[in-house]
Length: 138
Image (cartoon, rainbow, N blue to C red; front, side, top):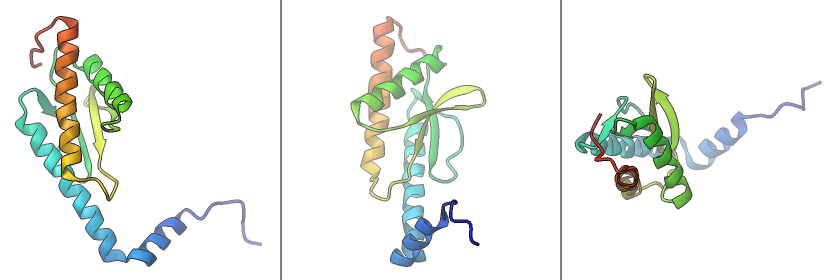
């Protein structure tokens, strides 16, 4: 008989496409990718931030520049998660700790990711000041 102990993982995707249509799904995905490119452009324009990988789809990996960047960026992510401003995660790109923003929610707006970028700058500067350092780009 059919194996009923396994989940049908594609069912959720099928229902979503059936309900909204492939064009609407494609538009939502294209929109999140455009928002990610906007965040990538913001990061590239900020001297205190460093884009660690090209933005190709909906994921932006970057960090606050600092001689102690790995520890600093881990602390920034922890503070952002606790504040509720955003929910970035940590990853490593080329051995460097990176802030990873994955834009997947169809309700995410460009101003939401700009607020995350603002918060990264604010928290990075605050942590550097708490350490008594000057935040030299590194």
